[in-house]
Amino acid sequence: MPKKKSTSKKLTLYQKVSKKFTALNNKLPEEQKLSIQRRRQLIKQGILPALSTTPKSKIRVKQIDEIIKGQIALIPTRDPNLCNLNYISPSQYQEIEWFEIDEFLQRRLPDCIYVKVNAGRFGSTKIFNTRNYNYYFNGVQQITENIRKEVGNESGSAFYSGRQMLRPKMKNDGKADSYYLDLVLYIQPKRGTATPQSTLGKITRYQGQDEVETKNIKETATKVNNKLDKILSKLTKEKEAKGRAFRQIKKDDKKITKIVNKKVTPRNEFKIIEDFAKNYERAKKKLDNYLSKGLISKAKYDKAMASLKENYDKFNEN
Image (cartoon, rainbow, N blue to C red; front, side):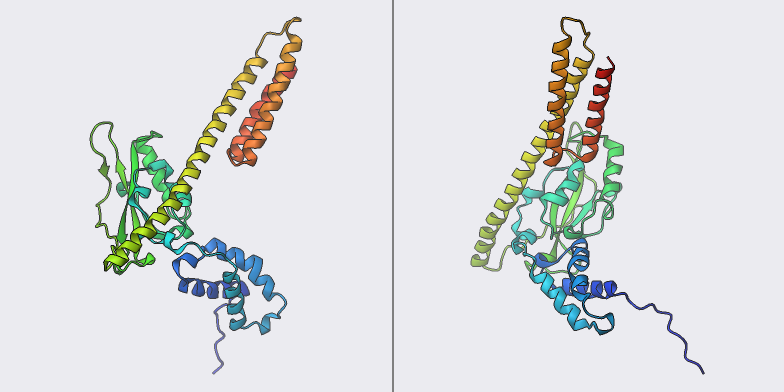
C-alpha cells in the first residue's frame, strides 16, 4: 500500500527561530524576559541576518540557539527588584483616573508586572504581563469606552485602585512571578463613598521569614519606590509641558484669527501686516518645536497647521 503524503506544512526559518526564542524566553527570569514585539524585532534585525550566510539546509537548532542567546546577552537587564510587587508601595497604584489607565500600564508601571484590569460590569481582562501590554489587544480600550458611555469624560467620576494578589496556583514565596496587580474600578458619586465594581480579593504581600529578610525587603522597597517616584515626577512634568503647549496653540490661534479679522485702513495696514507675519512665523516655529519634543501628536500638529494655513490664505485674500 502506498504511503500517505504528509499534509503538515514545514516551518519556515522565521517560525523555527520564533519557536526556539519563545522557549528560551520563557526560561529567563522576569527581569530578562522580552516582549513579543522585541523578540520579533531581534529576529528580523539580528538573528535572521546572522543566519543568512548559512545555507538553509545546513542550519541546525544548536546554531539558532547560540545566536539567540548571543542576542539576549547584548540586552541590558532591568533592575530585577522593579519586577516584584512586594517591593512596590501600594501608594504607587492607588486612585488612578479611569481615562489614564493606558498611560499607567504603559509608562508608570514597570514592564514586567502581572496585571488584571478589573472593571466589573464594564469588562475585565485576563491576567497579563505589562511587557506584552497592548491597549486594544488586551481589551483595555473597550473597557475604557464602556466606562465613558456612563460617566462621559468627567474627571473624578471613576478610578482604579490596585490590590496585590497571588496568581492562580502560586505560593506566597516572595518571587516576582507569584503575584499580580488586581486593578479594581471604583465609581465615585458626587456625594458619598466610592463603590468597587467587582469583588475585592485578598491582598497578599510577602513580609519575610525573619527579621533580617523583613529588613532587606524594606530597604529594597525604598530604593524601588524612589525610582518609581522619579518616573512619576518625569511624567508629571511632561504632562504639564503638554498642557502648556496645548494652551499656547489655542492662544496663538485666537490671536492670529483676531489679526486676520481686523479692519484694515491706510493708517494701520503696515502694522497689521507686520503683526500677522511676526505672529504667524512664531506660531509655526512653536508647532514644529512641540512636535519635535513629542509635546503634541502628529494629528494635533496637522490640525493646528491647517488652521494656520487657513488664516494665512484668508489674510492674503484681504
